[in-house]
Image 1 (cartoon, rainbow, N blue to C red):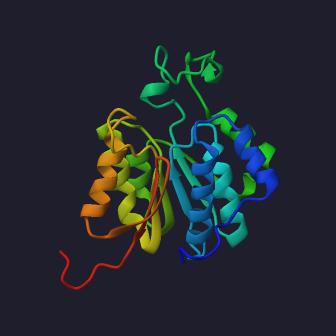
Image 2: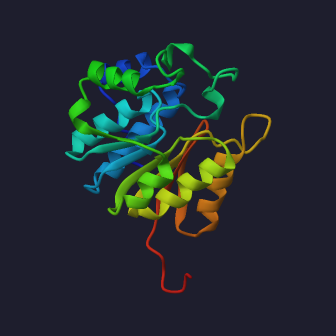
Image 3: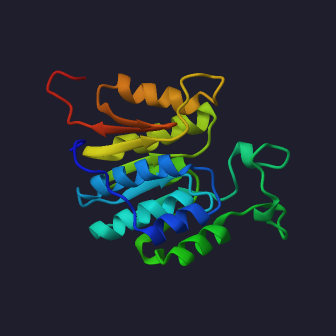
Length: 221
């Protein structure tokens, strides 16, 4: 499957991705899109953890649209640690002036509306472990791009990786083997996935890692 030509979004979809508020660079976005298109072939939903303002959701939604499945996106929309006031990635434009806290949900909805992809996405507004606890079905793809503390990254991995269907993909963002390049929590869950024996690395693009889940063999515990 890796020898096939990469799936590429149409120009309007790529433009919607680039115009959306967010942090994912284009090369990683294209790798995510290709993974999502291939995973959507399983006929199962595609899920991301960490919606923010919908930049990567645009790509998952279009991949889901192509396959006739749904994209699911999980976020409490109050911002991760590094997006709070006083931190590097804080954006005062997404602070709710009434309650004085971040609220990226309205911006996310505008992003999907501008891309014309609202009907292909289900937004699950809540904390990742709580949503994972009640989600019962298998998933074709899980994209982990939520909080970057060990607590949050581990919670995302433990909650959602077991729900990836055999042959499905686990995609992890912000994986930095060198601590000088970024936080280590996503890297540590990436290593956990490999060490589990259930996931095999498929591709590396920047800080984006794509892994495929294989069925456990009879001898694996």
